[in-house]
Image 1 (tube, rainbow, N blue to C red):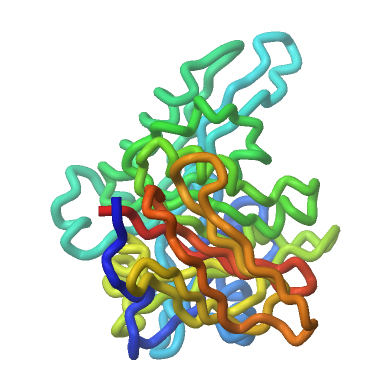
Image 2 (image 1 turned 180 degrees about the vertical axis):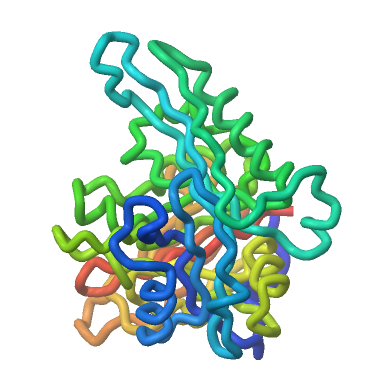
Length: 328
């Protein structure tokens, strides 16, 4: 196996900051759609997906501006309930359906309309978790949406309920809300299990903000997308191609492979990790020994890696995650 010489992020392409996971007063959030759009725009964001629970909304006609756009979407769900009288939630699948490109919408056999509900799939006692997840993903795809899988650790799903899912372009690897709510915001284990199986799937950092004031849950996880223009079509195409990185703080300026060596350029960080698929001990870490902050790191490949991704971690533990590159 080998990796061609390549630069992971398109050079000389505009970069746009966005949050794909935001709740409003249309479900269990405390900001109206208008307030959410205004506050994210004030914080330097270029796009926002309003992803209310089981309710598709499209506020783009009202809220789009030349410097800020809304991605229409919803957070759809399937839930496993206790078969007893309590009916407590044992596990849940939460997935985003984000409106795809004009071509995808035109080809879709079904379409959502603004303020359309999608009732959750409910199972009691037991379920075939992967089959239920696939049913939900297929439903969203059939409506012309691109699909993400959200916060599996918080959702109490087993790896077997997620690994093998098809039709999702991304999985949340960092969720700011669940991180501050209950320490369940990091999901890279599920991501790497999928990648090791050969699934090609990108990572996503997001807020999942509800803004109820109990703890900070806004402006802590985002993606930076490389796209020629700030339009839904261009942003969605970039998401599907993996032309973005995720972060809770550091900037990933670029990274790539040159003559069998992985190189990374980033804002000052305490460590840079190369995470790789392959045999045990694949991958490596460079640690800042001088206290000045790493802005460049290099890793010589062994030649048996199946995929590569990088993580840049600053002194506060905040992380930037690349999307994977795959061996030829």
